[in-house]
Amino acid sequence: QVHLVESGGGLVQPGGSLRLSCVASGTIANIRAMGWYRQAPGKERELVATINNYGDTNYKDSVKGRFTISGDNAKSTWYLQMNSLKPDDTAVYYCNAKVQYTLLHNYWGQGTQVTVSS
Image (cartoon, rainbow, N blue to C red):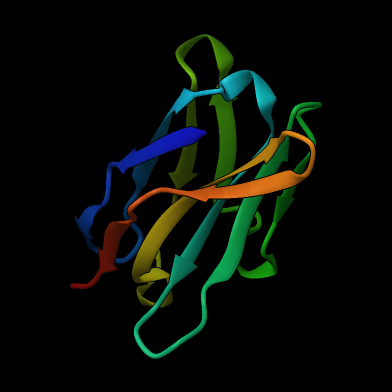
């Protein structure tokens, strides 16, 4: 199994920046991809950004050019750098790991709140 712990959320003014961190523990050698998702009140959880073991990244259109996903394998930590934040970015942000055993499994962190408001 893989255990994920997010941190770095908080309250920030529009135009500000935050960096979210996700620390993984457990069978991390089986991780094939990491991702950040978010869920705003009354809305479904949506993909924000992903990165695979080859370093390939994918972003939601509305965050392209503002958010950057990265990973530090030595620290088993993945990051989401968020710049030029907008009120629409307000949500609970979740870290996700896709872990390969016989089948591909999804693991989730507990979430961290990001609030963009003046």
